[in-house]
Image (tube, rainbow, N blue to C red; front, side, top):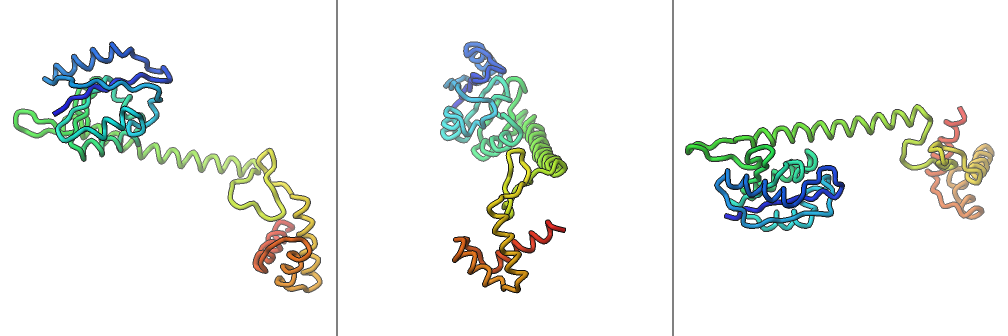
Length: 231
């Protein structure tokens, strides 16, 4: 069994705690758990928003830990980042049967603990449920934000994305505006169709005379779209 102390030096300096302070807290916390810190890993140059699995020391640590090993950290937020990352990390630790002790939460957040010969979930189940709920809410809020953003752009008359219709282009203000060259081609298609040209013949003329490669179905859609916009 190996016990690893994980020190995180916040590159954004939003929660900067000196290495020596973190080391002392981890070692003192280890004593309360009757553990000895075999190794101290120092992580720096990363934002706390980056998942532990994507950090250099974090990824190495998760790769090397085995069944029965322990990880100690001063603050849970330094290894969890956000609810989604937290859930992924907890799944990895549970699968490997590795205990994650967070001094600020005062407990094992990844594995059930043994107390008086009775297996107890301790705080691990609560942390997992909380992260799951927060992750669900985060996904819901993200979807709501996307929908609200699209509604706002639609109200402002701005382009919502997808293929830009032939004859149009997206302007600097985010709105669709006419493309003069393509509108001129559409005008010629309209005139040819009014003269009873078939869609196939119009497509051939566009290709031979204008270098525009479109199928007869493409011509039909362009003219239909133009007709709808004219109404």
